[in-house]
Length: 302
Image (tube, rainbow, N blue to C red):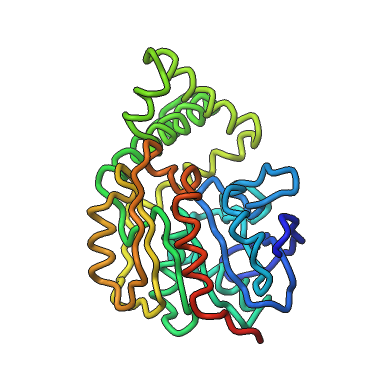
């Protein structure tokens, strides 16, 4: 059983100093788990307040793996914020350098949103190093719609005289892009209530992380506007999980990704009112497929 309690560590890389978290026996094969741009490597906590806590029940039943997760450079957490934003490829390389210091038995990568993009980048750049990848709510390139939404987030950060207001509004717009019109119709009786909810999410981010969270919109959000990964280079078995009304990784892009992958290993498309945030909200609906993906062929011990 992989307990929801982590031991933290640091790793120096050519790109930034990374803070990592290890869950489980350090002698077991490694599964990397990476979440979205606002994620911490503290994906699970004993008090159930981890960033991707809903994923832990899957791992609570596994005894033959350990899990490693990292804070992102320029993100929320203990990793270094470089003076110049890293590219998607450099983020992937930073994690690779950190992993090389911790293990020689990388068996799988589970990535949600940004974490899935980095998993695809890693697998494309180092085809022989990653046996399997589950990319959840992620594609090999950005959708035009999602890039436009991020452009507006960056404009808010750059043009608001009040820096805190810029953070609040940029986060509110990001939250709007992660969810769907269907959810807002079901959840709110009036647009004023929905607007207050979105502003609250921005204020919550600022309150919990201070002005340092501005780097989410200067160091991470912009790099997702122009990345491009060649899926034909990916030799890993790749499982895809996508969501019917996801504006960030729409099914049309996931269709294209699936058609280009040499070794696709099934796809789960989920109907959800939560849009992109389905990767957190709808874990129960893809948990059995993900469990099968991780265990269909026993992960080899060292």
